[in-house]
Image (cartoon, rainbow, N blue to C red):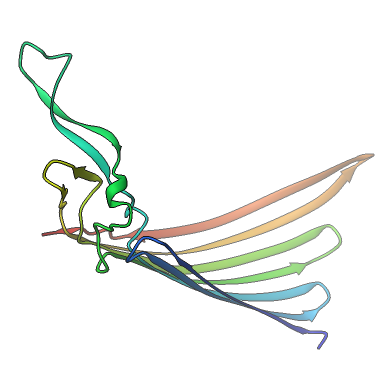
Length: 206
C-alpha cells in the first residue's frame, strides 16, 4: 500500500578448501518493515540475523619448518640457542594440524526501531533505538605453526575453549533546525544519546 513497505534480504555462502577439515558457511536474513501514517512521519523496524560456522579456522595454515638448537649469534658467550623458522613445510601442505574438532561459531541478532517526523519546514525530529546480541565460541584442539623435520612432529599446542558473548543497547534522538540570516543558511543539531555494551570473554585451557 502507500503506507506499509517491506524488504527481505536472504544470503548464503559456503567456502570449501583443498586443505582437509577446513570449511566455512554463512547464513544471513535481514528484514525491514516501514509504516508511513503521514507524508512527514515514518516508523521503521529492522531485524537482522547472521550465523557463521567455521571448521579448521583461519589459523589452520601450513606449518613452518623449524630448526631447533640454532646458536644465538648475539649471546655466544652464554651458549644460548633458539628455534628459528627455515621455510614453509611443503611436505605437510595437505595436513591440517587442528583436525575436524577445531571450530569457530558466530551469531548476531540485531534489532533497530527508528521514528522520523518533520514538525515543520524548519524543524525535524529523528529518534532511534537499537538492541543487539552476538557471540563467538571458538574451540582449539590442535597444534600451532611449527613442524620439526628431524622428529617429523608438529607442535601440539594447548587445547582451549573461548566463548565470547556480547550485548548492548542504545538510544539516540536528534532535533534538527534549519534557519537563515539574510543570505546565510544555518543548521543547528541537538543530539541526546545513551549506549550500554557488555562483554564477557572467557577462556578455558586444558
